[in-house]
Picture 1 (cartoon, one colour):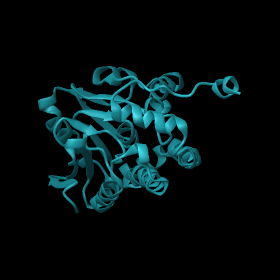
Picture 2: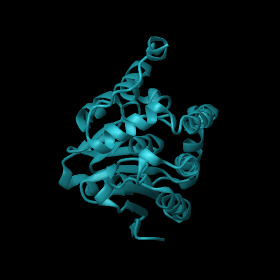
Picture 3: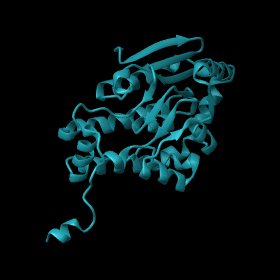
Picture 4: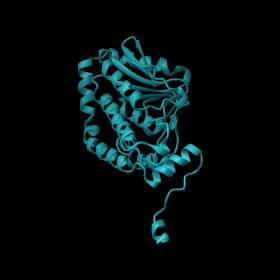
Length: 261
């Protein structure tokens, strides 16, 4: 296991800590694969916890240069994200997201994939897709609606607003919010409570609860296919350039081609 993901066995739980704070724990293909392996290997524990290092949970997928993105690299990162999220859903163990800071883009979809989410008061949530030339198709546009409702999920995925932890709690996005200094102790309490229950019947309950995830799986695949086909589009290049240059994007608008003609 690389230093990108730190593993700690804590009582009846395995903690997996994303460890690239200099990029807000955004994951590249290798880090995503390491985290997926960590979830798979933690089945000997009663509970699995995913958290971030320093002041961030996860800022989603990372590419060094979005303006010159390699379509094959992006395809691999997209499919790796789905494998990670599905590994969490298929794991026989409950998986808790201990959200210690920003959970944005694919990082928010990582929270959605987990069975439970406990957030520090300073944490915030949101999607970034249409703001940077992408779209959240593996949870943000679909599975999130199961928790907060369709209209709210569309607001999250399309408007790219930030939602503080307490608002996320009110919406049903997370299970609990605690002061930052109490986050890990609170998660430990949840782990202890889950650890006192039947692993066999927790697994049955989890498998049963995956009904909506299973029905959405084809939507995830088609969404990732559309994202891959859009690599190199004018919208993606403008979104990436604006993000790297820290400016407001100027996306092509409907009718621009007709006006030029």
